[in-house]
Length: 447
Image 1 (spheres, rainbow, N blue to C red):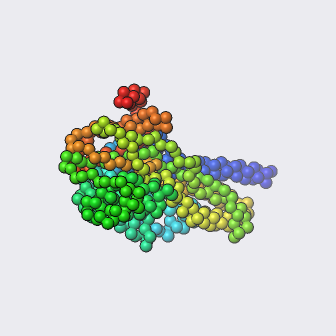
Image 2: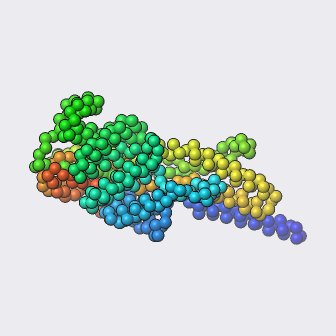
Image 3: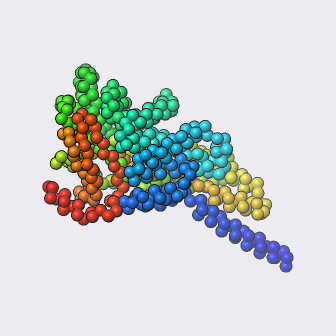
């Protein structure tokens, strides 16, 4: 009787442990699940709700990924100083992670990759500097924006003999230098941006934007580099291009649009055969599911003219490419981890509670690292427009695939003589309270 009761008790305890395993799996939610909830507000045109979720999750700013999300959401709510304050925390923590601890490496090899400190992909680290620079531009602190570009340049140099250059960052750097009257430095930045676009355009970077071609040629002409000017015109198929004459009655409008949202990583799992233990072992790894989303198209209307924008950064493509490059290392760690877990389970195959608990724990902790900076835009678009000096009303009209206007962002801008004025916006979805149905008739009247 006692033996039977013990069997029943053992059975019940096994069931409890299995139920506990299921609960552990639920509680070990991947970052992608949190990211979806974080972005709900953005997809409904309500960044304040998303910011409240992010601030509540990590009020003490302990996590780099959390600081990146909060910094971007503060930008979207026009808190540029607050955005840079939290971005600066993320930047300092990333610097600390350059010396990864032995403890973190052991944990990633025995539990899962989420125990590794998150320093962000390289393109994310560079975009951190770019968005801090954009914050400073909107705060009219160009000297501080220049410092961010210099820090990004140092970081790229630290990455080796063939540093990971970012074309958009180089282009933005050149625009900042121009507005600080550092034309020689601006020319160097435009040349570097052109090289990256030429080498990687059509892969994980856009093809060379026409606006960059014109900016490079314009500065070559201004600096009297006639031989390079003629050669570059032919190389870029811009033989008919003529730079505008300097006229102090004109200035420039620079519009930057952060359009859409970057892809979210999901978790996938599959059995993989290990020659070391001669068994199929389950491993989990991150993936980007689905294809790149189709974005609404922006059209700028100013001074009774309309202008399209050009793609200067494809963050969706950069994210997918970065994961592809890291996948061999991810799979190697996952396989090694599965072998360690399998061997520890085999050492406890005596039917003991410890053995069962170990099996349950291994099952529950095999999760993929799905962390990524999910409030980044899908792509960045840019346009530069020469306008007469004075006040102008700028509209960015977002048009869907049918050509219908679904949202309008407006801003009044003062154009100064031979200077740049900036309009930098984010667009994820129509803003709350916008009478969308009234926008289409207004557009038709303009036609």
